[in-house]
Image (cartoon, rainbow, N blue to C red; front, side):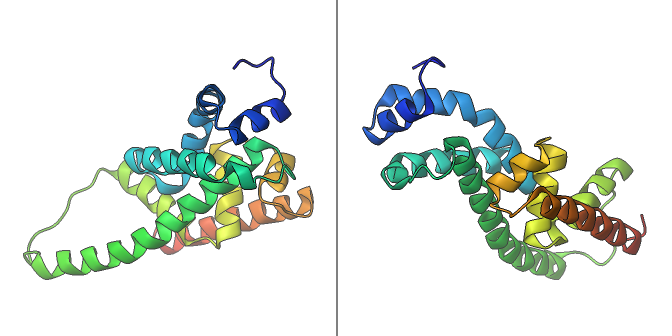
Length: 183
């Protein structure tokens, strides 16, 4: 399939389990979906795994796609949901692993971290601490460079004004968190 096909034709082909249509959609959307996912999970391998799951879900559930939005908007929603679900489950695992690590650490053992890496990690933690809607909007706006209108469509928000407010609040919350952490 090439770009000469309409979205309607591509969706019809997907619903008919046309392998060329899946290949086309994969090649067209993989990089941007992975980028969105990476902006949330901050790990390349995890982002690749999650995006692969998105395409498996596409294959399994395209018959239920109601075409109330564009295919790309639908894929963005899936990748956002999967990414945040992954983070939620990862946080639980991380709490237990940090607890186990503290129990096994030697008292005089200190981890030395490069300042830039520490700041990046602090920023990632500040983003993860945001309320979910703020984190989604922040990630799509700053990492993916999506327009406020596109974000409103992907997240099914009422207006661009809502997106603007969420971006503003996210920035404020990140600044507060970064100051609280001594940055």
